[in-house]
Image (cartoon, rainbow, N blue to C red; front, side, top):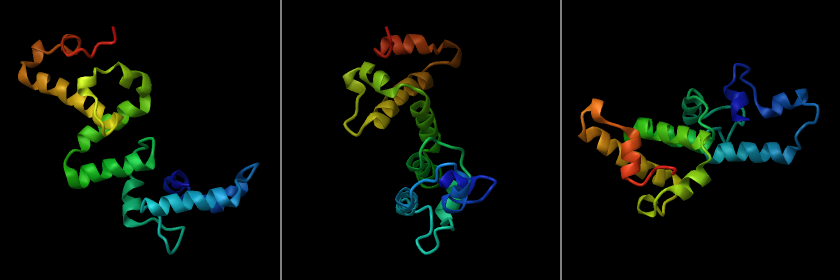
Length: 151
């Protein structure tokens, strides 16, 4: 529903469903709208209107989930860590994260979840990168030294 709203069509599932060969059942559409309202992206008074936050997030590229888009937006606007969140959301959207997370040494794993574990790994690598001249930085060497290599 959110993707339909932010598309050039500027429509929503309620209006668009007439074009589906098999229309979604009403409870599914209602649940989707409720989720958008819980995330604060769609008005609770008019299901056809974005909130201010929803309008802002609709301008972001697709970040695989609305929760991630909301987190990235907050990171960009309020937390000054948008770059980190964009990198992490990109990693999470393209990798087989469950297999990758299992291979990360336990000293880098975070009880807060996979996202924070990846942030720890990224920070370890960036710390080394920032401490050596650019021409001397070798990602393979750093990963081997930190136990982050796949082998």
